[in-house]
Length: 140
Image (cartoon, rainbow, N blue to C red; front, side, top):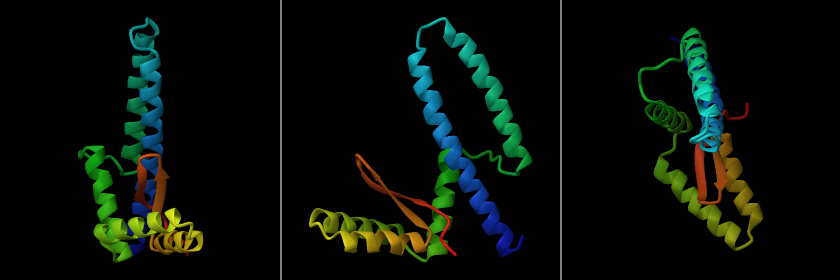
């Protein structure tokens, strides 16, 4: 498979996995609402049917993997690091540097770090627990 096709497949996989992650979070939230209620049985049947549809679509796209989702996501992260020519330790250093800049109200420096990583295909995600990263499609 040539590099262009591999790159497109990578972004398709990343997009699908991102959407599935959001879907799974929504499903988990819904399951918590219905815990112990009669509606739960109907919900489970719907989820099983939906799981089959998702697996069919992933199989059609050639994205179905026997690996657990966490392994696939880790593979995508490693590919993104390789493509960006950066190590995870370097990203963590940049995140610390950015956090320090934000704490010191050096917002231009903070924005510069975010943009620098984004240009390499690394998106920073600010969450209540702290800043994390994920692969993203670098701008062209």
